[in-house]
Image: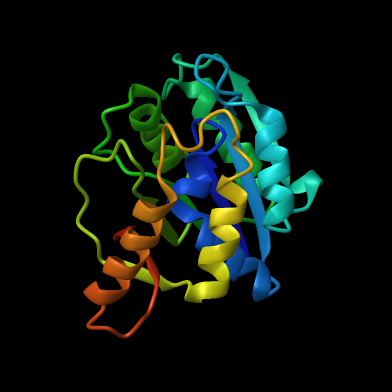
Length: 196
């Protein structure tokens, strides 16, 4: 299966989907990463993302930055077309992207642009992050402890942000709580909203 994880900034994808990425890699799926900005306005750094993706075993040639100016992501024709080209080029079958219910404007615009670009793809899943206001969770990925630990190791690559923007204990607790939401079916899970 060819899957893509789309985010606005370095670290967005790992925060929402790091365990799921690790699981896809373990299943030998082709995993692609599309980041719209280099996160230059925040404490993000592209070199941190490259280190993080290496921890998650993502091939360097499967990582792309669209180089949109941080804080200026839009859902215009150019952005939608660029995302759609990437999806078609890589024969993507499943898309993961931000939820619409975000306080960060780049995340909302990334969601809208990705949704429009993905209109011909069968499965689109929205992930939550620290700036997600609310999300109706209807799809859970069992990430097991090995995938959770890879996610945490990947997030620790963001030296400039850790622990200011996120707390590892909170991430572990969320994974346990999301597993619990599945009637204790999973020990650890990452939640999504399946767009139907």
